[in-house]
Image (cartoon, helix red, strand yellow):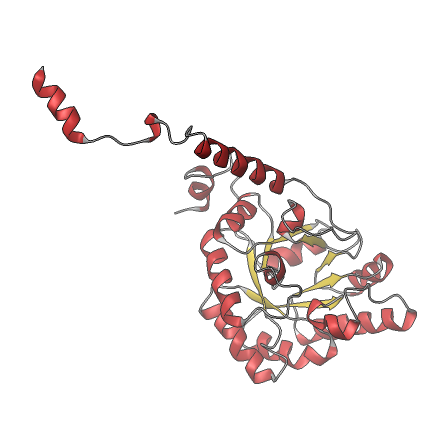
Length: 297
């Protein structure tokens, strides 16, 4: 099925959605060079990934944030490689245009570079990811280089790195001192030199993110890092009010899916209790009754 057909046929296709060519990391690089912002969102299943892709978002991240917004954990740490593979496969089936990036979960690359490479290969080979995302700076450069040499694009992640929540003492803004800001910039340059294709900058002063973005040849994608990154990303569930928690300062809610779903569910329950659903029109009858009626005539 062509991209055009995917966008103009089938249940759920967006009305009037424009056809667009496949996004690659070269596309993202060209956007940075042309000063055209990159759009990115998380997605964790077929339905949401299809909606995000049909909206022509450039990059879809199957984030380990699913541990919190889909599985109900308090942090991202408990989610496993197999669980991430499961969700990445579901997203991959839906996406025709966007770049699909899979988060490497905690414990999948921290033990050794060899283990990190082996797990990254699984995300590409078994789940169809086009790249993997890993957290950390200089300490990850060897892994980034090995993955790049193996033909696996890498998205780095600096600043507020959720997998290091215990070391940071919570979800706190990073890089607020001159020394910390310089370390972040140094880490970003090292990740680029090691072969990273994109770097996510999270939870840092906008001035620091702007400086890093200016220093790098590769694109930066911000989340809580101000308006001067090459692109922006948010968690899908935060975007539509499905996270069931107070939003972070950097979150802008563009819809209220929780209210929509709650209203629909309550209406359904009420119709069932009042025997208003299903109606006769929503029910099946016996074919023999119709046949008997036809014979009488």
